[in-house]
Image (cartoon, rainbow, N blue to C red; front, side, top):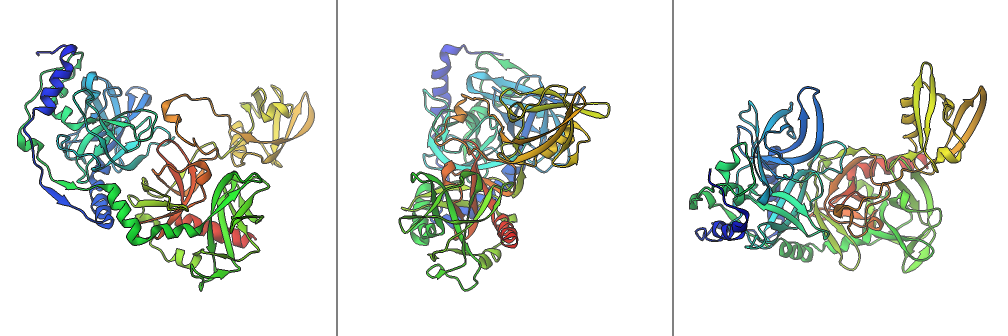
Length: 567
């Protein structure tokens, strides 16, 4: 097979991608945001089913190994497109679809590192879900696009949807597309799709700014389709295929997403929904969080005042002393109920306040089951609106930042549970635990095993106090231990360097969905609405570069019901 050496890369790329026949795609127009959302949500269904989780796999031990990444299936017999920095030639991979009942095995085929392009093939497969190929030849700046990939920040592999637009086209000197579809580790190899749900790129890499997300144009794969189907790791560019006009023709929509947003905000007056938010500050007037106002009076309307208005906010963001900003002044609220596990707090005020969400009307809204793919709007004062899309259905987000940290390593020895290790400067160390102490009870319950003890600790949150009974050299002791937050290892990755950073408490939540609006940690507690102005949820935590966690409508109702009964 003829190969071309690296010095000819730029000139060859220019020839291949910019000397192709000039194409005119049949263009359709979408003039309003509601029509766009309908088309977008219809298109993502097939793309979602074709988006796969991929991991190195040992067929003997039946264990996942090494890096885990994403890909998109583009044929019914299982051809997968992914990134070359993840997909390796002749390597064995486990492949998992969002909805298939079993996993599959794939083998690495061709790999072109110069373009970060790689292909895998699922073995013994037929009639698999797949996404159609689009073309990157005629993309336009501001054209909407979306991605589906398996973010590495989740312990359990989960396909996540993100929405954005083409920000910069590939050029003679830069073969990558730049988009505003957010990306983070684990997304590599995932599909980038146009508004028709066709593949226009493959997720590749990021730089520091949130709008610096780079994708391999799909026409790179088209140009080297024959070569990529061969199991070869190309050190130089292989022979290319010729692209016909018909192969690159595709239907397009002439859409500027930002213009649709702006037009919709004006017509729908969404910014007026900021009245539902209220600021929570410390004694130095520094913003701690937002709160969302609710009332339980069925007769309540936005322009009336009421005595039974409550505020829901993020519990861990609020210390013992904090204030509500009401008519420009600091007012001390009453803490009615704190749910540390859910990281929510219910507040009350003596003063009458305007603009609250009616609890009865909230319960009458459509089911949370239809939230996936909804356009989201986080509303703040001064016409600040942060847009996004609901990237998952409702689910439970597991994790450890919500659990208290003790710093004990335990082991089971016959009928005893022994301290094997005490982490220096941890709560356990400060409480005086030593190696070979025998753990007997936690909060009055007999400890039957090391795992049972750990599970009990994880039911608590930071700053909780636990009582631990233990023996040392036959003598009984009791320790009251105040749990801390789990230490977070320092990470200098670009993916961790974004404005505001992560919320300290960002997981271990029920009834949540995630969206891709870049909400700051001190903006949590704020309201999220849809294109109709209906309540979707409350921002609960900034989880990662790409992800904000939101409490769903049903989660809000569950908490309000629980809190009011408790109080």
